[in-house]
Each structure stands twice: as structure tokens, then as C-alpha cells.
Length: 186
Image (tube, helix red, strand yellow):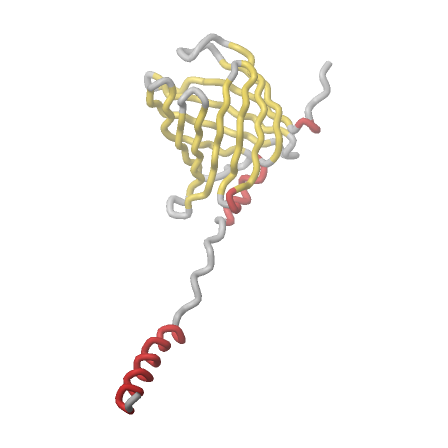
């Protein structure tokens, strides 16, 4: 190897190694928004009972529902499943905090082809209200879900509403209990 080719090779090696010397460490993976801690009251297994009023969706009837909810997907989502025994229905929800909107975002899917995306600003006292667009039975409508937690965290109430003909109409109300905290039957 000539002196000239050795100099070129050393220069090339130095140029290639310089970026490695100044390369930055890869960015740290993102962390869940601290606001996600506000969803902890939903964690657990819940037994719910309530009623659905008569509506275009069907006759009035009592409801029995089980809900399982937990923090998942690396802490970025509250993940839940809903199984309604009467009337039969299955659904899933995912809730996250969108730092850009500064709102919670809930996505709902069910076994009847229904879906919704709603947002909430956060808890106001003991209530959090999600509003947005829902799709049910091929119809788009505004939807509102209000969750009210008890002071001791043993129960919460859920009220579902849809806007029909310009008015909010109840789609059902339920009271949910942790099975261990369920009231004794008389």
C-alpha cells in the first residue's frame, strides 16, 4: 500500500467514525400521561344492574351487566370489556388521555356493529362526562356517557344518552358494584 492510499484509507476511516462519536442516544420511549391516573377508579371487576327505557332501540327492560377494566397497553390505555346478560350484548372500550387536545378519549365497539368516539375534560367532582359521535344500527347520533363515582370507590353509576330529534334521550342507567362490596340481597 502506498503512502497516498494509506492516507486516503485513514481519512475515510476517520470520516466514517466521526458520526459514531457524535451520535446521540436514541430517544427515551414515551411515557403515559400523568392524567391516566385519573382513570384508576374504573379498575376492577364490576357487577351492574339497571334499566333501559322504551326507545326506538327496543322495549323497556331491566339490565344486568358485568364490566372488567384495567390499565393496559403500557399504561397508555384503560381497557375494558362489557358483557350484558339481559339484553344480550358485548362491548369493549379503550380510554386514553390525548395531551394535544388535553382531553380523555374513549373508543367504544360492540357486537351489534355499534361504535363511538367520545371525549371528556376529566373529573368534575365525582363525575366524568364523555360526549361525541356514536353509530348504532346504521345511524349516526350524538352520544353522552356520564359516570358518577361514590366517595368510597365501591360503586359508580353510569347513564347513557343519545340525542334524538334534537333532545337527549336516556338509553339506560346502571349502578355498578365491586362484587365484594355488593349490597346483601333481601
